Amino acid sequence: MTNTDTLPIEERQRCEVWTRVMGYHRPVSQFNVGKRSEHRERHHFTERAATLAP
Image (tube, rainbow, N blue to C red; front, side, top):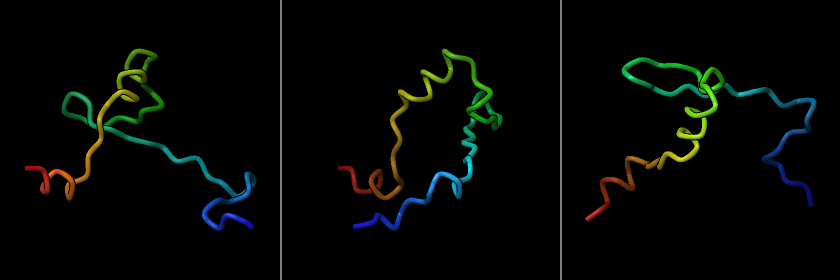
């Protein structure tokens, strides 16, 4: 069985992730080692989940 959600390596395209830091937007690829580590530890949430919280 083949997973239809994945592409072969040669067809994939790099995705640049941006985040808001100190009031401005910046690509995560330009972060230093410490900031990248901090970014990986962040807790992400969805708006729907946040509105359903008691």
